[in-house]
Amino acid sequence: MPPLEAGYDESINNSKDSVDDHRWNKIFPNCVADSNMSAAFMKRAIYVAFSVILHRRKILPAEFFSKNYITSKMSCFTLCFKNVKSHAISQWLKACGDALQKKHLKELCLVVTKKEGEVEAVETYSLKFCYYEDGRVAADLGTRYNEEPSTPFEKLTELEYKGTGSVRDQLVLLVRSIIYITQKVLKPLPPDFAVNFRIEYAEGTPDDFKVDGFADTSKFYTLPEDIQSATLGHLRPGHHGAFMDCSSKYMEDAYKAELDLKRHLDEIASALGYDSNESIYQTMETGNVSKDSKQNITPEKTKEVESPEAVPMKPGESPIVAPKKTRASGRSKGHVNDSQQSPYSKTRSRK
Image (tube, rainbow, N blue to C red; front, side):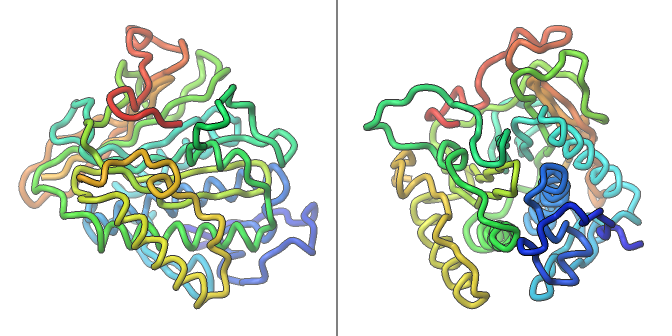
C-alpha cells in the first residue's frame, strides 16, 4: 500500500455527508463528521501541511519527498516513507496526531531559529487545536469585552462543522496558502539556520503522558517585537478545529501578505467551485500587525515541549531532525516548571 493510503471503516458515516473523490478517499475518510474519522482526518492533515512547508520552504532536500494527490485536481510533495530520515520525521508527526486523538495536543509548531537551542524564533508555522465535545461547541475561552475583536483562534472555536466537502475545501486552500506564502511572500531563509518541531500540551493532559520521540525541555519559543504574522488557514472537521499561521522576520508586511493571499485564494476557490468566505485573517480584522513593517531540523514539544535535538550539519549534508517537548500549564518534568510563559510572551497577545 502506498505511504499515504489508508483504509477506514466508513460504515458508521452518513452517506449524504461525503466526498466522492477516489484520490481523496485513498488518504482521508470520505466523511469526517464522526469523532474517530474527524481525528483520522486531522492526523493526515498535519502530515500533509507540514510536508508542504518543509518542501516549499526548502528546509529539507528534494529526496526527502514524493509526489502525492490529495484530491483528483491537486497534488503536492509529502515526506517520503522510503527515505529513512524523512520517515523518522513522519513518525514524529504521526505521534503528534496520536496525541491529538487523545485531546492532549494544544499546539504543534515548526520553529526556525538562527542557531540551535535558541528560544527566539525568526520564523514559525504554528498549528493550534481546539476540541468540540458535541461536534458543535468548543471549550469556553473565558470572558472577553464586547469591544475587543475576536482573535483568529477565538473565531475558529465559533465555527460550525459544514460537511466533509467544506473540510476538503479548507485543506486544499490551506495547502495553497502555504505554497503562496513560501513562494511569493517570504524572503529566502539564510544559508545557516536551525529547525525543530515544538509542541504544547492541552490543559488536563496527564503529567506522565509523552509524545513518542519528543524530549522534555524548559523552553517553547518567543517571537521578536517586530515580527510579522499572517493567517494561512483553518480546518473544521466534525469534532476538531485547527488554525495555522506563519510568523516570520522574512515577511515585509503582513497586511499586504494577507490581502494578496486572500485574492489568490478567492481566485482558486472560484476556479474550483470552493467556498472561501470563512477564511480567518488576523491583520484585516484584528488590526494587531504594524504596517511599518547549513540547515538543522529537530522536533520539539512543551507541557511546554520540544522536539528532537538539532544535529549540526556539514556543507552538502541533509538536515536531520530530532524532537523535544515542553510542558505548559504546570505539567512539567525536571526544571520545565520554571518556564511556563506563553509562547507569545514577547509579542502582542494572541490565542
